[in-house]
Length: 261
Image 1 (cartoon, one colour):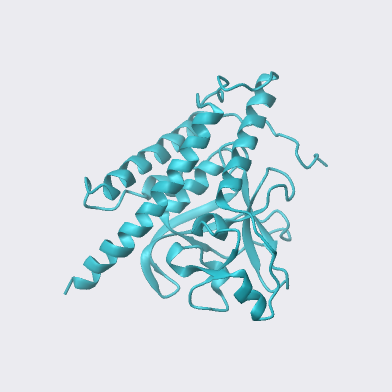
Image 2: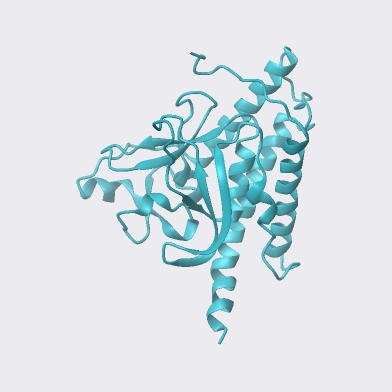
C-alpha cells in the first residue's frame, strides 16, 4: 500500500505534451472570445479527448443540453477508485471553460475523486492528490470560487444536483443561513486559491521525484518545460479566463440565443 503522499513518477510523453498544447490553445481562443476578438465560442473538441497520464477522467463528450439546461456542456465520467469492480459512476456535467482548468490541475498527478456528503446522501467530486484523500478540495467550491464564509449549493435546490458542476447551476449560501436551516457546515471552508497552491505542491513534488534534487524557482518539469511559478500562474490564468467566460456568455451568449427566431 503506497504512502498517502507518495509520488508516482509520471512520464510526460507525446500525448501529455499534446494535451498541454490543446489546453493552451483553448485558453488562447477563450481569451480572444472574452476580449471580443472572436465571435464564436472556443473549440472545446480537442480538450474533450485531452488527458494527462494519470487523469481520473475516463471519458468525456460535448452536449448542447443537459438536465434541463441548454448550455455549452462537457459530460464526463470520473473514475472512482473505491467503487466495486465493474461499477462506474454516473456522468457529471461541466462548463468547457472550467473543464480545461480541471485538466491542467491533473498535470502532476492531482485527480478528481468521489467522496460522500456528510449525511451520506450522495457522492460529490473533490480534487485530491494521487493517493488517498490528501487535499480533498470540493470541486464545486473551486468552480464557483466560493468564499470561506459561504457554502456552495445548487441554485434551484434539486435533489439530484450533485451531478451538475456547471457554474450557472451553482450559488453561494451564507453559512449563517445554512446553520439557521438546521444544517451542518464548517465554521470556515477552504477556498480556490488553496486548491491551486496544493496543485503547485504536487507539481513541485513531481519535479523533485524525477530529478532527485531540491526544487528551485528555476526547476522545470521534464517533458513540459514548465517551472512551478509558471504552473501556478497558468492555473490562476485558466480560472480567471473561466470566470470571464462564464460572465460573458451568461450576459451575451444567452441573450443572443434567446433573440433568435
